[in-house]
Length: 593
Image (cartoon, rainbow, N blue to C red):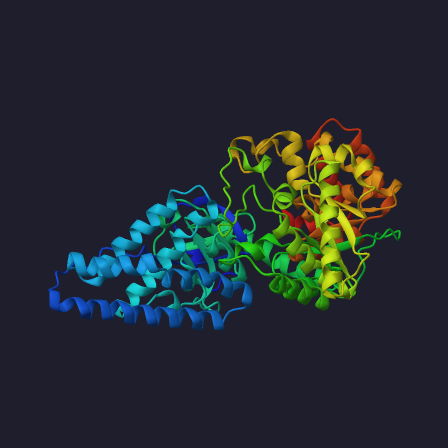
């Protein structure tokens, strides 16, 4: 964990920062401080005769930049490469290019100055829009501008030249093209002041597989080159100048975790089954086809949630039916005969598309035009996705799941559009599974309360606990002021879950959970005791949750569930789960606490 013993010798006071964990893992290294790019270029007046030369410099820089971005794409997996499509669009944006050329001609200034001024104008315009996706494209314009500047001046990014092992990159922000140039043999962690979980930078940082935290606000002004620094990418915690005691403690924790992780890896091919033979399906959540590698190595039994909206959001235009088919079919083929549940588009809330001619402006987007409501209002787009899913179902393992069902009418209308999609495929002569299973996500209290009626229209339920908790307890889970009210073990949540599970069993349909609650191994005994049939979690959480399942008996799980359903304190329920876990699988506490 600590390659340099001198790291532990620092006498400076600890500085603690909290942000958003993007990539889990614990590491101690030394700070490489990446200072902000200085956009103040040297301004130079040019004569009329020099204008063609400056325009030629600009065009040469554009050509070089376009070539470099395509080379970056060629060296990335498709999910990462698609992020740079937005950069290529900027390079081909006529207003952007023409404004720079006109600026050179009219203002008689060197292209370096004009480029910065035009780019700033574009970024300021994007920063004012309410669409989060468009606001985050500010970083793309900035990245492309910096790369053009480098090609104008001959200066290159310094991150690719890092030579010191055990380096932790600290910066206000990092551009996507800089991230893909990072040498993972040298850089062991990343900590950024800016960034959100949906930003391109965060997505790329997560793909590096090293501990990373974003949204730290004031870290880079407080850190200095060479400072010892600790990162916990799972908890979003960063400590500059960690004490000797903290480092020794962390070293012990990491060593213990390594041993536990090695033990859990041996569970890969074993069933998710309790000591007394109660078996459930343990699936994984994915966002892009490339995530299947992690599913296959984790020991999961297929995919319980394929979040398709990220496939739509990572590209400048809507994917065609054929492109969607290829993505879904590639996953289904690799997983077969294990199941794959594809959730139809869950846009809205905090996920938007900029490539649709629709307005996303809403005062309360999480309770507005989103998920199944959006799809029913866009039947052509919805039917295209359904056709692609149906065509991928020929492997026999594909299922469809509708998000955020709140009324019976919604699921009836969705099924009607599905029938239309089947009819269109039959007319075209495309093969599909006519008996494909359809499920509903239960993440709205109204759906949980009328589950007995919804059961007539579907073959399975999947509890989306993140939103179910949010809507039931009337809290915004992203609001720090009310974060203390976000209680998965609240009596109302447990009763809604239990009702849904019981209704499903009486109706001879199974019920799964694909929310964050399912990934918490401390909650595993409780969920088993409630009678859940399937858990779908992140691939990284599969081994530890499987260990929790295999360490308990179903009778013990039933006892804790019965006690929880009669308890009036969510804190007591959580403590009961913790104590049981400590008794049956103490190594789990080493990983999660």
